[in-house]
Image (tube, rainbow, N blue to C red):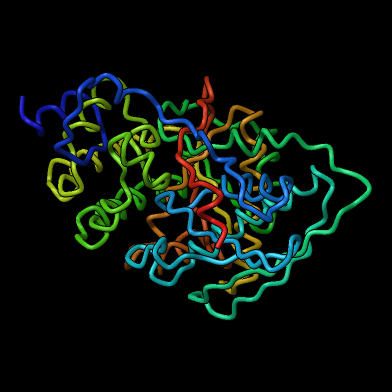
Length: 369
């Protein structure tokens, strides 16, 4: 069976990197855990070290984890970004980078309040490509918020096994009521939902066959366990939810060059076709404009709701390719009648069994400058 046939019949959906020789191939099926993340940095208090770790569990495009932390004083930090972890092809304006920093900040503020700290925040960045984004000062309080930080550790993106049940009116209110001006829900079978599904498929086709975008994706896929342990970021067979023998195959026989092959691109589109018709519908998150404070706030709103949905057995799958590809990104708001700036397109749906998080995470020591 050749590679093309394997992809077709295994249902791998997404595949990529190659030529890895191993002594025990079944060891590649083991999911790499987030081990050894607490190797502390000299001069950083244990509480603060844990806060940075919890903040770093935020989502980011291709799981690049673009955030950095520069310690000015023990409780005074500068949150910035690492240019080597930007996505200049699909996120040429750094819009998604700033949204991710907002999610990082929400994790930080939430975890800090649970440990009895208030976080004073000043936005430093004036331009989307500035390296220093936020000035953070932590102040000790005499009380702590009642919040289980395990919710931060358990947050994950879910791509497969969405149920087709409609969201209950109660759960639609749960998702949108606190953010009526910026959270818009469209059911799967609505006119708007069909438009988003079709547009998402088209945008994925455009992006998948755009060689610079595909090359950028290839750079961030970690196929082997050795690469996952080495880089601790990017996409993995586990995060792409490739299972069983298909996972073993891609971990051992795919390389970054494989991402550029037609068989991989075709499998990607087939997977997206299956995804856009599954689930309950689409949640759009908007902002008043695309200024840096608004993007930060929007990223925080996303993360805030993401920390709550697991308890409701609601899965979230960001599919914002319509906001990345021309000419679709310039027409989506007018077609949907949305007057604000759309910043996130999320596929939403119920799930029977919520899976554990599997995305690798960088060592905190490598986040601190």
